[in-house]
Length: 255
Image (cartoon, rainbow, N blue to C red; front, side, top):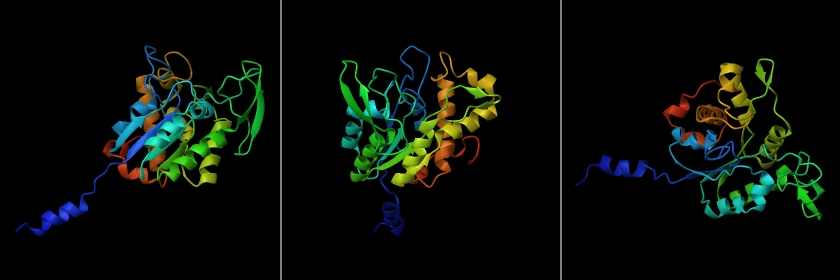
């Protein structure tokens, strides 16, 4: 006869099969600003801090709109199973592009039902939608599959006001608004990373940016990943349950 403890252990040891999908731009993507540039995206380092599988579907150069229109969100939705997480972070490539549409810009405004008519490169007039429109449509599709979306604000550039990182722009506000409207977890990645950068100081932080003020070195990407984990730990997200001991020990505190 088997001891009772053997059966108890079978009952209390859950099979963890959840996956985390990452949707974002070059600041999150493998090879960051491009292969051979010496840069790396923070999503590459997130597996150091979580106990479940991570699929990094971030693509350099994408915006919420171009990621949507290229079918990237559809691909993730097709893969998501109940209990999976999807971390969504855009903003760096979503700004207005001038007289001719670049295929990335969103209609300006903090809300879902906002459109703008722009001129495409072939001269035709097309209607584009807001940042929230593209992301909230993806959120609805993820939730319909039983997935758990998390909206994260874009990361700061290496731009300083005195001895602190410059304040975030409109896409940080837009991301926070999406979290509120859709009642999902919002990670204020911008300000958690600003906290980390301010503690390190401009001289050290500048070493994280070998080519420009946007794309981080591997060392910098690790700091960016740590800041995301710190922000996550300061939310009520169930993804916190899968943060390992290294993640529990990332620097700084809750804002």
